[in-house]
Image (tube, rainbow, N blue to C red; front, side):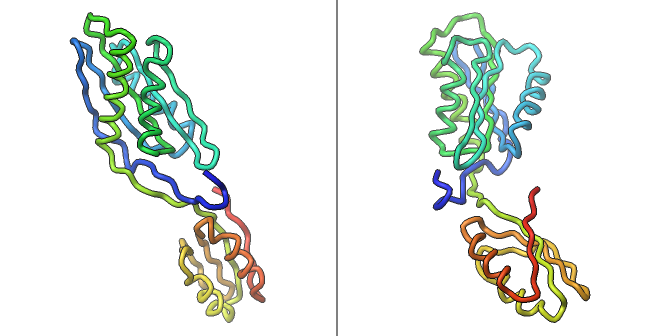
Amino acid sequence: MNHGDEDSYKTLLKATEEVVYKDRNSKFYGYAFPLISEAEAGELLEQLATRHRKASHLCYAWQWGVWQPSHRVNDGGEPTHSAGMPIFGQIQSFGLTNVLVAVIRIYGGTKLGIGGLIQAYRTTARMALEAGVVITKTLEQEYFVKCDYPKLGALLKILSQPGISILRQELERQCTLHISVRLKEAEKTEAIIRNTPGVSLEKHYR
């Protein structure tokens, strides 16, 4: 995605319910999660490993970021590229980011072969994502804006424009407003506020 023209992305609304795919007595349990950070992926995988202590393989793929997304795949002990990449392929197929998809296999005693494994992991990942609700999110820049009370009316007029949200406000003799601006509107909005007499602005980084 290009920094200049994209400030939205697709992800999952919430973690999906467990799905199960069966092939020749092997069971494949699929899960999909939205991520709030890369680190969260590791925490979720630890929880799944604890939940499925007798699993033969825990395989996964995740993607994080919008303009230059990073990703990781893991075959969990299966033959190279037979599990992690098919799972990642489904994340790409759904056009998602900031997500983790994990598939846990309980071995049923019959080998599936490379082709069978690819099919099983791909299908389970697709089922897990199909069980989710896909949403579109926008990237935002947050600011703290301050002004004396007499300037508040002029400031609120600026902040009534589309793409700007007031998250919190303290309206006293000196007013402080915590605002969020859609990224593609941020540069223009920042310039307008900075050029408004009696108003100060600073970026807020979470």
